[in-house]
Picture 1: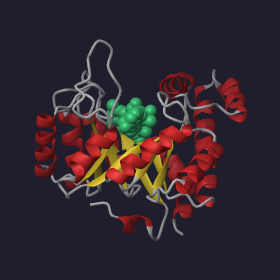
Picture 2: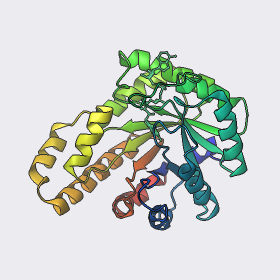
Picture 3: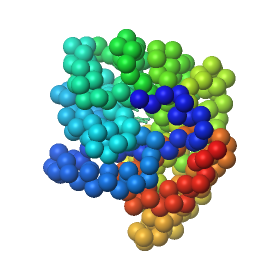
Picture 4: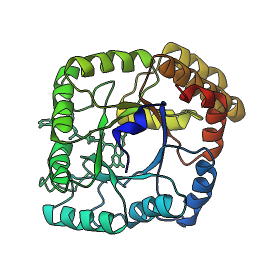
Length: 287
Ligand code: FAD
């Protein structure tokens, strides 16, 4: 199980992967994992398809294998918007039986034409529920540029505090491309009495379509330096990839220099990119 001590002697380095699309065989993700494990991450988290009402068995299976086959700590994401209390009890049973001890507890996003169940209206409700079992390391999401539905940062951070008060002991941030947003956010988080570790979510942007999609979903602001880079290299995929990696490396160097608790790399299941970033930054993670 992930514990507080993970953060004591180094900057945490973790990865996020997603289960392959329904149309692709699950094995494709195992090639990714073979490669990612060589980088000795502190943990690998596995996303859970938004709106899934039946157990997303791929998430459970992959998280179990990360632990058992690859010997790496795993984190299962668990959104709750479409989860009934009865199903939640079942999830806990399945997770426990699979030996999964770390959960990223999320609300998730509503799917068009599918009414949320409201048994767990907010992530904090799920966190309180999971805390009752007293056997999980519970993590939660946070938003350096404010969650799109929140009226302002202060309100969003009040709700974040509800998550840590309910039992989340580790936060992972939404991706951002401007480190100053993260530093401003972190200052407010600490001022509001949230003391748990906060990992910075970094997504290496290796093509323009990817960032347009992500920005439309999460609203991350695009710094001038980043936009210039995209405009210059968008028609040259190799140069775009190298520039995207260099940009992420630059962010990570700056974050670690500022004493960030951890870097959570949104790998997009691309181990080559993770290797390049690791190669360029690996000595920085030791305190
Ligand atoms: P919450 O913490 O519930 O917050 C959602 C909104 O409600 C915020 O605006 C908040 O300010 C507000 N709020 C919270 N509590 C209250 C309250 N008591 N009263 C009024 N308003 C309140 N989605 C997936 O479907 N699957 C995944 O695997 C996944 N992984 C993610 C991993 C990370 C690191 C991040 C940052 C996001 C991930 N998401 C995932 C997306 C996430 O589900 C969405 O961003 C979702 O919109 C919010 O989830 P949350 O857990 O932050 O929600």
